[in-house]
Amino acid sequence: MAKKVSKNQRTNRGAQEAKQMAKIIVSSKKQNGQFEFRSKMVEAGNVQDELKAAQAA
Image (cartoon, rainbow, N blue to C red; front, side):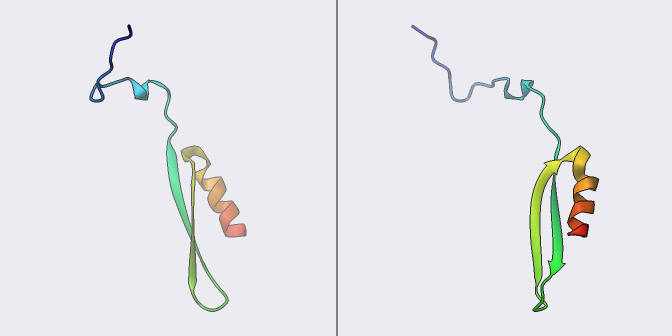
């Protein structure tokens, strides 16, 4: 019979390599004067590329 695992037992969930992520929030003004906010999760190394792409759009 298998051992029972306690729900409070600490496991090594963080053993695999975790990705560093950043949340980008871009604002833009609509035709009617209201502001619109778009959010996106990207890897930390790609933040500048995503910001440039968002500003061009």
